Length: 110
Length: 116
Image (cartoon, rainbow over all chains, first blue to last red):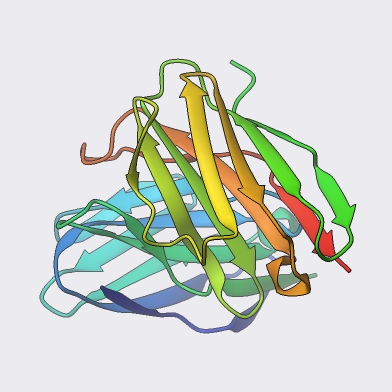
């Protein structure tokens, strides 16, 4: 099974940087995903890490340390449209199912 | 492609009634997932199919829930009888594969179910 922890809420100013941490405990690891979910909408895929290190995709970057059971999502040059919930999800190597964290609600203020 | 399609988008029903949620996955995707999202429990996997065959239904809450996938382009999730605690947003998602390096799941818009 999976145990995934991430902060409930974060607030930041437009143009700033925010880092959302995710820690996990798993019986088998086969990758970590970050999804973005705007209020009332479906989750959409942001990033994927399976090896240690940083994956950069435009304003968004995701980092993974498998030995520490730790990941973060870095959002740079924040825009108002980045206000959303960010879900950390871990894929289990035993059954390949995704388990989601409770999500971090990010509010971007002008 | 139009993406994953779900219907209805909203459903309000009375306790004890049967509810059927529908999903059309992205064409060519071999895997279909049903999730439920609530404030209390977050996003939970209920069941998933591979090539129309149910593979893992360990997340289905109880016998009142059932899911079918009669063909590659259609799946249903049925709740009978419904209870107020079933109120949630139900998402359908599909993916090309399950274990490939970055096999993301594409989510439908969800069905917001309210049981009174």
